[in-house]
Image (cartoon, rainbow, N blue to C red; front, side, top):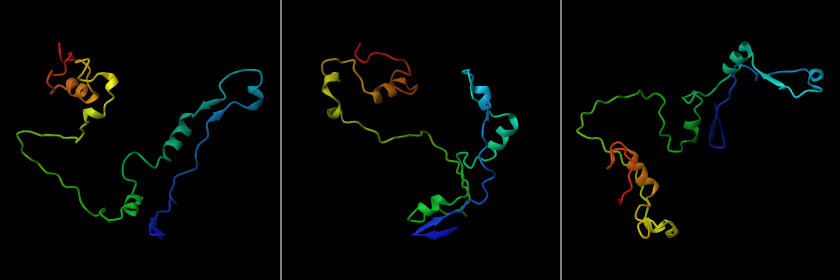
Length: 141
């Protein structure tokens, strides 16, 4: 790893192999037909291509996150910590709230058509913990 313009650059010298190419029909065989040209990978090539994967949605150890984190809040040596907490209830609040005055009045929300609802109201209605226990009902019927 080296520093360049206040950024830490990680060199990838351990990429396992070059990209595998799919098996293709020879040019002479392609003439005069509309058969598929690329035949995909055989098992051996597919396995070699899969071994090239550098990202499986988990940490690769590249330290790019650390390089980009200006407050340097990432501590690689920190161990995972698990806590057991006894609670009577868990409240999850996404902080999403839509002011009704910003919704286009041409939809008739709460004015002309009482059964017009927002997407958040629908999501709450579809939830098993919502007011209708997941049953879709018209609010004003």
